[in-house]
Image (cartoon, rainbow, N blue to C red; front, side, top):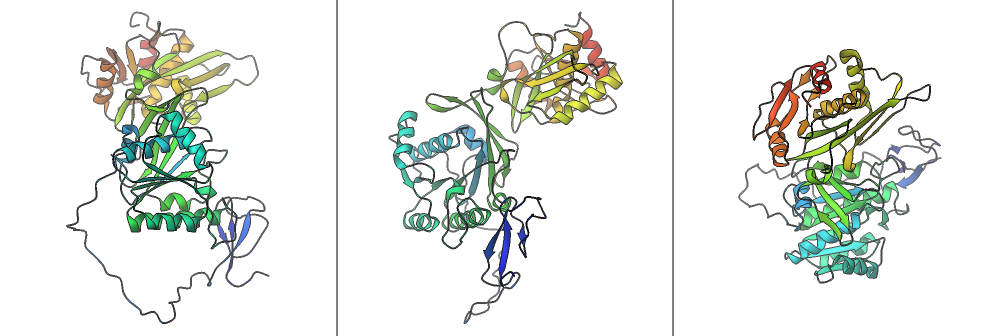
Length: 455
């Protein structure tokens, strides 16, 4: 029989249950419910004995107190994703795959911010202080005035942060911390939620910018309860494909800036280097463009990015043709292929189709539809697109080419990198020396690609 005030929390999804059962009713995981004793029944808000009742002190929106300046970390790519710098008193959750470079990035952030006068602390629950020093020597950051500590007890960390005045604190990682107020082990839903809540309250109360490192599960989701993502002010994802030196810092949530910004880094022997012009790295400058390649003029956050879509359409040797895609949505590929078959007469039923976004970048905006379709048509027709042509546009199920946002910005970036013409929506207006071949239907684009005189 369950004790009074006992709750059972799923360690997989964080759902609270009134009684124990073998399977969580929310995520269907087995044997994940752990008991959490509550000091009072759920929903009861009994006042403390002897405490006086008082109301809320409401305030207006207007204020005469100036906002504190943002903390500049010295890494422009990191500051861009944060919205122009780290906001004092904010809590940031940084997540990424193991080995992608989260600790390296945050050590560089701390060191560069400390060199600019910010009081920074790096607290690790996964490495010893000497290991952090070794990495700092390798990165050339040994002279930065960063305070280091190796600790997992939440109470000791909170007491230490209250004694000294810090501007920026990194906790690596939130899954290693434990609070003596709960009996669950480190990394459990109860401990992660409690430790994150205490650190967020400390950040708001004392004006400290806290960056929490979070682990990810095997399917790429942030480990722990989703309530942690709601607690913090910003959620950043650090992504990178194995075999590529590029790392993408992507903002998934940001209360103080845009949520679609990205920062591009390159991993080297001396750590992570900023990539000021990602388009030049994601494109192949050598040789003629082969059939099945199309350069997409995209927008990531506030910056234009040019990247190459590569497609291969080959006869299938099995009864069921293969469909493989890297860097783009599989469902989107299926939709584009269906439109090409129904509206343009290109058949893929007996062919294997492979689509790849070069450089390890993942594209999610609908404006990439026409670039993917152009790469597929180019490979199916065995006709190469012009070397100086970029492609962008959204495709509807009827085969229409729809206009996309910020077309002028896409064309300016294309002209900067030496492209002189573009294949896009009919409403696109040429500028900056780029000639736009406007099309209103996908069939027109496919016919233009198959016309050797245009190429």
